[in-house]
Amino acid sequence: MISVQKADFDMAQLYGALREESANAGGIACFTGLVREFYEPEDKGREPAVKSLFLEHYPGMTEKALADIVAEAEGRWDVLASQVVHRVGELHAGDQIVFVGVASTHRGDAFAAAEFIMDYLKTRAPFWKKQQAGDTSEWIESRASDEQARARWEKSS
Image 1 (cartoon, one colour):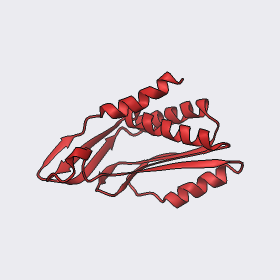
Image 2 (image 1 turned 90 degrees about the vertical axis):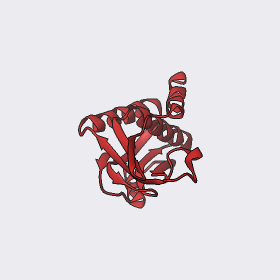
Image 3 (image 1 turned 135 degrees about the horizontal axis):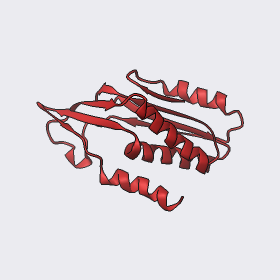
């Protein structure tokens, strides 16, 4: 299941759906991303802290990009079931922003597929983030570390 939504999500419910969908799973790997109070670690303690993060996307295009990423993971690893939920709209520090869950016969495939999906989601899914801090707002650029994380999968393909 892939969902792009404004509403928060229930991790226990998503995990339960993965369990039901994959009766023969040997492992389920789940990741939940949260909105940070500071965009970069070195910003911690600096004022002003992030008031909000606003995420935009292109409906239809974003879901297709996510489906393509999941399909690529399914082609590389033994994926029995997966869940990807990404929130859009206005979010605040501590809010859940993304959930990736993968069920597989073996834990290694579940871990690898979930990490792959997250790394590709960060660099290939069409989301735009605008950060509000103090009285200013700015669009957040993609980070080199996200591109490096994604690039390592290309070496192992």
